[in-house]
Image (cartoon, rainbow, N blue to C red; front, side):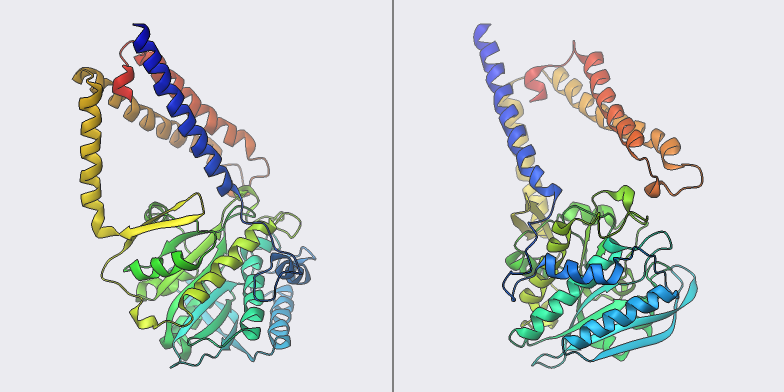
Length: 429
């Protein structure tokens, strides 16, 4: 009996150490890399250099929705900044219309082309400069704009690339992706675009995650994994995002089969699309991560044949605590799953629990997951429908967050209490 208790303690202690290691590793994913100062080498992305540009653009904390005088001021400033770097700037002044979000908007897209030495194939770097009426949009999407300005400076001073780099800063994104639609429908450069890198945000802090990509992406993921210094991506998030009613400018281009990588940071989502999305609250580490991700993609594919990006299969991928992007062909998923099932079967045989205990323990875990999700769904009605406010913009989000966390803890306690007499340690392992 004593030996069994010692064995159980060892099991528990080993699991406790694994859990601690996991939590320590996951803590590194709560923020982006340390922002580099203005004295960083000129070939490297500096969040502080980019942040100075951001303060110049939106430091007055005024909203600038499409069509406003403030949006025109910002557009002219972005144009002037590109010209100061030695670029020629084209303004696409046109009517952008979408059926996805029915309607039209007069838009002014900013288009800058950095010529390469090759045949004119284009890597398009894109973000949008308009804001929602509620706030100045330092994160959504001022961070993307100034990241592109910093990259434009780096490319101007560096060695020529084979492929052209197109900087497209769209207007009218918040009104329904209208600027992106206008470029896709009307501009002749679109036919040469082979790869798109989009920067977005759904918050004001946190790491910049690659949350969406295109199909047939095995070579694309391999190239990205080989150059990005702080990869944060997993194919599960892509599968989840593809089933959500959310869109970015990349949603305009993706149906036509153009390869792409979509990045966003999502921390402090309660401040998203609000007056608090300003330069004071924006995390500079998020800006650093944004810029590093986009620059890494340019380095990965700037001198490659973009026609070879499409693969016969997709990649399955997951980052290891933001340090390394583990990836493999999705065709291996079935044999890997069978192998994992065999290991699971070996564990059942090794622990020798009774079948009834295994079934009870497994049922408890499934019931716990379903109960937690059910409580979250039930709470989403009172918490997600604040009077006269979109739930992401609520100024006091913590009561709702605490309610959600309390529901999860209650579900765990209740299931454990109900099944305590029937749960078996080996079966749970």
